[in-house]
Amino acid sequence: MYLLINPSENPMEAAFTGDAVSDGGGGSEMSKSLAVITCTALAIFYVAILYSPTLILRLQPPDSFQSYMIRRFICAAISSVFSLIACSLILPIQWGKSHLFSVYGIRLDHMWQAVVFPLTLTSLMYAGTLILKLLLLLDSGQEDRENGRSLSLDSIKNVVYEFIESTFSLASDISAWRNYLVAPLTEELVFRACMIPLLLCGGFSTYTVVFLCPIFFSLAHLNHLLEYAQRSGSWPKAFAVVGFQLGYTVIFGSYASFLFVRTGHLTAPLVAHIFCNYMGIPIIISRRTGMVTVASVAGLLGFLWLLFPLTTPHLYNARTDNCMCWHRYCSWS
Image (cartoon, rainbow, N blue to C red; front, side, top):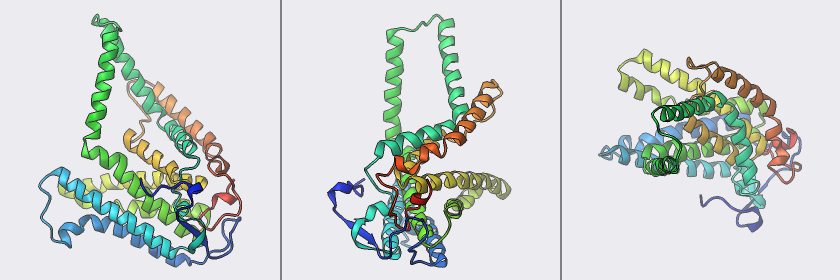
C-alpha cells in the first residue's frame, strides 16, 4: 500500500496541537459527542456508499458477480480515503512534528513483531480447528497407506503442485480478494485506524474505547440483514444469522481494538482480521474426537495467559512516553 511510509524518511508530518500526554487522557481538544457522532457518520458512510452506484448514481446493475465486487471494492476504497482525510481534519493534529500516518498506526517500523506476535496469539483461539485439520490430514495419509500408496517423491510433488494450484486459484478468486484483502484492509482503516483515535482523543477511557468501537463495527454489518432475508425468504432466519454474525463481530472487534490500542500498529489487527477470515468460526467441539475440545480449552487458556505479554507496548514501539491523545499505549503497559 502506497500510504505506508518509513518514519526515517520524514515525508509528511503532523503534530498534536495541545500538550503531549503520557497519561493517555490529557490534552484532548475534542468532545465525546463529536467523537461519537463522527464515528457513527463514518460507519453509515462505509455502508451507504456500497449502494450509491445504483441508488444515487443510477448506474446499471453489474452484469457479473466479478463486476459487482469490483464496484464494491472501489466504493470501500473511496470510503476509507474519505475517512482518513476527514479524521485528519477533526483530530487535534497539525503539520509539524510527528508523522501523520502514525496517528492511524500506518507504520513500517516493528513490522515483524506486529505480524508474528498477534498471529501467534490469534492462532491459539483456533487450536481446536488446527488439531482437527491435522487429524484429517493424518487420516488421509492412513487411507493412502491402506490403499497401497506409500509416501514417495511423486506423492510429495503432487501435494506441492496441488498447493501451488490452489494458491493461484485463490489469487484469481474475487471472493478471496474481498475476504482476505479489501474487507480487512478497509474495515481496519475505518473502524480501527480512524475511529479509535477519535474516541481516545474524545476523552473516553481505554476499556470503553475497546468495547465501544466494535459497536460501530457491528452496525456496519446490519446491511446483511436485508440481503439474507431476500436470499432465504425468511426474516426469522435472517435475524438469527445476522444476530450471530453481529455477536461474532463485536467479540472480534473488541479484540482488534485491543490490539490496535495496545500496539499502536495497524498491522496487528489487520493480520488478525485476515487470519480470522481465512479460518472462519473456531471449532470448539467435534464428534470425531475429544482432542479438539481439549485443544480448544488449552488454546483459550494460552490466549488469556499471553494476551498482555505478547501485546506489551514496548515490543511494538521504540518509546512509550511523550504520547499524544491518540496513543493510549503509553499508559497501558
